[in-house]
Image (cartoon, rainbow, N blue to C red; front, side, top):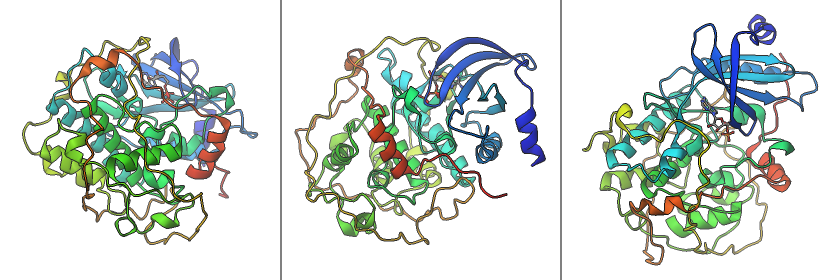
Length: 419
Ligand code: ADP
């Protein structure tokens, strides 16, 4: 408790010299600042705590303290955390750009070795956190920040867990439906690190395609797009699926072969990608096992981070537009939402808790069977020309989404626990 008191009372406002605003994120405004103690440039995320009647929530502080201890080259460093004028300020190391900006920059050519390097850094950060029983839960390219030295770092780690879903003032903010694992889309309440691995697979796919892989405009549509691409899972492939709270039966479609979807990828890349895109979270490859996959030891070796091209340091990017290539219809939902509830077996799933991730499943390497082929879905190869046209129109959160999200992701702000 003494440490928590210290966190609460720490005066830090006179330590940081505020500079320009960097942007407004899901939880509040982010400023550039200079740490006068270290002369370091930092990014300060100011988090509104409006909903908290009694000031800073203790659980939040405890979890932030945990994040402060997550020290890894591929995780953004949380330098400091302090409450100030009713807001919580989180001080992070300053990062030049992010992976979304890289993917979107049509002047940047990403070689297979560059892609391998980005994926490796992403998985290293994830594996570290999963080892420490922390889930990210909001993996998406603009949460993968890139420093001046080219190192990619996972940002916003655990914030979804700590702060819950955004409030009304932030409705313009994006929500990463496109990166959500099928178990989350089916309403799983107990889930594990596999959700981050699925999102990492979507990011891997996006690096290959240079556009978001599956751009659903609702949860049902997202699942439809997943199944249209990868095939509708059959119960033997994912036995727990039918017991998930929001499970609905989808018309069976065989999906496409992964090599048709990603014709530019090597066999090793495809093998790893299909293991990361395994439907059953219990059979999905873990971040650590993914790092041990032969994709990372086969040629070409991953590019040295400092040598990968980067966009110019972050400023307001022009509004790009990317064509929506996901206009194909997904499989039809066969049954209305039904509630065939069953308590998920505790031995396999677990309530996500940054302190209690005690059942990480690591035994799955089973590859998804990509059956059948349909040729009408033409994937983009290294055709970067479209990136000047249209940015991915990322879905925004509306109030229906928010309550849905709360229900689905259990993102309610944590009630103080009994100490
Ligand atoms: P979101 O919630 O949408 O992920 P964030 O709150 O993380 O957004 O960030 C808002 C803006 O601040 C974005 O433009 C982001 O790139 C920028 N930003 C966030 N963290 C950092 C950082 N450590 N260094 C530099 N810019 C940052």
